[in-house]
Amino acid sequence: MATKAAPTKEAAELDEQIPAEPAEETSTESKTRLYLLSALAKDGAAAIKELSDLVSQVGSKVEKSEDLGLKRLAFAINKQRQLTLVSVFFNASTAVLAELQAELKHAETLERYLLTDWKADLNAPARRPRRDEVKKESSRDV
Image (cartoon, rainbow, N blue to C red; front, side, top):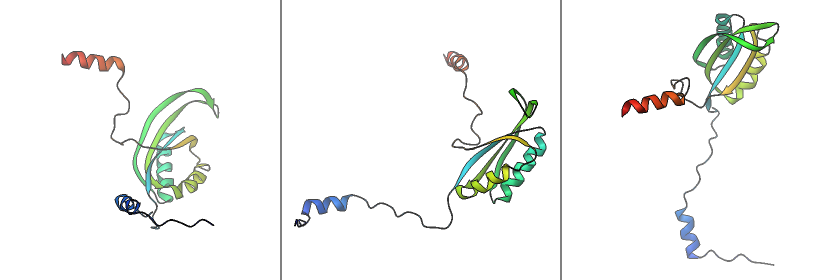
């Protein structure tokens, strides 16, 4: 039967130098994250209103909503070749996402939707500059 050796003085000093790990939060409030809900619909204004209402219904806050206009589709969805693309940014906890997705399945104005988490800043540029735009700007600086 093996016995444990007493910790040495050096081991005790090392243990003191290592910071203790922070205790995990046990609060009842879960952290909220930013999500993007993109949808294709026949009527953009009605879709934004319905999406905003659904997000508010589950207890989340809408941060930003956009109507991105009529988009031509690569294939027909429910016999439609053009649909309006709308997006809604909102803060929510992961606990309410399942409830929101269940409600989205029964949404009348939506043809398709996609729910993703959003890691970028809401005020960030919509796209990165193209290579030729970057070259033009750098040549002007010279």
